Image 1 (cartoon, rainbow, N blue to C red):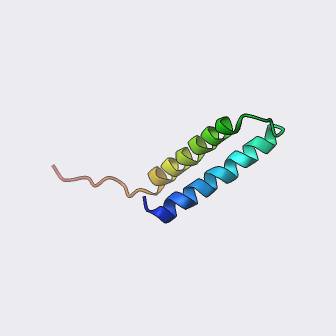
Image 2: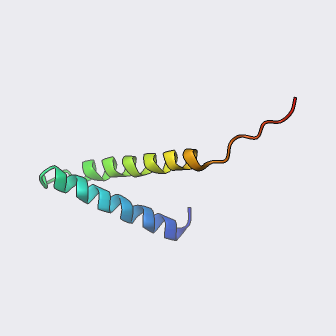
Length: 62
C-alpha cells in the first residue's frame, strides 16, 4: 500500500472511530477501543469488497 493509501485509510478509520465514540456518548479514556473497532470494521469492509469484485477463478480444462 502506498503512502497516499495509508493516509486515506487512516482518515477513514479516524472518521469511523469518531462516529463510534459519538454514538457511545463520548466516553473519556476509551480512544483506543474506538480506534480498534473502527480499524476492524474498515478492514473487514475492504476485504469483503475485494472478494466481491474479484474476477471469478479461472477453470482450466482437465
